[in-house]
Amino acid sequence: MASTSKIEIKKDALENNIRFVESLLEPETRLSAVIKGNAYGHGVNVIIPAFESLGIDHFHVYSSAEAKAAFPHKSKKSTLVIMGFVYQHDYAWIIENNVEFYISHIHILQMAIEAAQKCNKKARIHLNLETGMNRDGISVRNLKKVAKLINENKDHVTVIGTTTHFAGAESIANHTRVRKQFSTYKKRIKQLYSLGINPGIKNVASSAATINYPETRLDMVRVGILLYGYWPSRETFIHYIHRRKDKSDPLRRAIMWYTEVNLIKKVPEGEFIGYGMSFQAQHNMITMLAPVGYCNGYSRSLSNNGRVIVGGQLAPVIGTVNMNMIICDITNIENVKFGDQVVLIGKQDENEISFASFADMNNSLNYEILARLPENIDRTICEEVEET
Ligand SMILES: *Cc1c(COP(=O)(O)O)cnc(C)c1O
Image 1 (cartoon, rainbow, N blue to C red):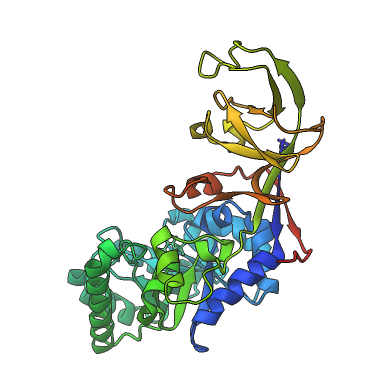
Image 2 (image 1 turned 90 degrees about the horizontal axis):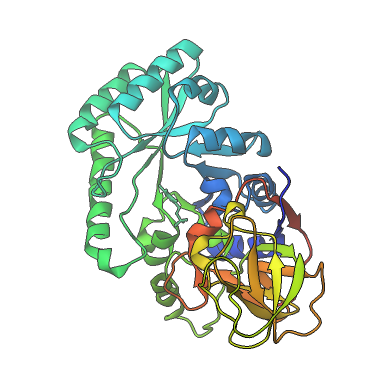
């Protein structure tokens, strides 16, 4: 299905964000890029080659399905790690292709060992430890059994790394819980050594922990949202900026999502616009139709609420977001013509429609909207360098 809108990814923004994260890290700490959710909606097909050309050679996805989608776009030298769900029938493909994966439960370890025996090749695993999030992860009561299984199956599994995930490092409200998790993690690492297991790469920090808890950066950080140019929370941004002289945002949004003006219409005062009665013209109006709706990733929550940029100015969405289109108010914008560019996310002239990773900032929409951008939208990389 061809799409009615396009996405452009700005490579110099990605480069800026990667260099920013790298600037926080000690030289021995590696940076892995999290590219789950189709690279946070940006598209693994463009993000992986772009990240690789900017020096990244390590990627994290969520599932075996995402690993299969990402795999053809990566170079042989790059490592791909699955953090979560694996279809049982995918283990053979994963092991054959040296894809690494988290072991979050002893049953998963057993399945992995069986699959590796069948493939006659070692499974490359990361031990995901339960430290207090109580979502996934190997619980302490199974640690001995896990170590025993690994030690008995050294021909079938190699421990590449040991990880855990914090339950909300983006908010100071969770400070005590996160600190406790980190100290539990360190305790478990010692236990692993004493059980004869080398924990390998120690990797626990997401974007928020990388910023807020520098001591958790360890051997590797796995960073998603920052690389795309967004902060994990407003708090994290404030925490970072608070200690700096330069208060400007060091990140740059990389995505630009746009479509074009489909048609323009005059609507007299008093008329209702679109379905039902959610919007009534309070004066004579000029409206513009853009061919994106909720089936194209333009969330219905933006009804009477979202804004687009057309003719270099912000135009409010009026009425409800339809399945395939939105209606926008361009009464006060001059010279808008059929076929003009309509920016849904990104910049045009001085204006920017930006999506935050969180929903509480003025003029920003939820990060969920990014992650839900449909896969069928054409995505291209833009190599041009923008002046800042
Ligand atoms: C999504 C995710 C990350 C990356 O989170 P960001 O906030 O985008 O940096 C890291 N670890 C796990 C387990 C995740 O699910």
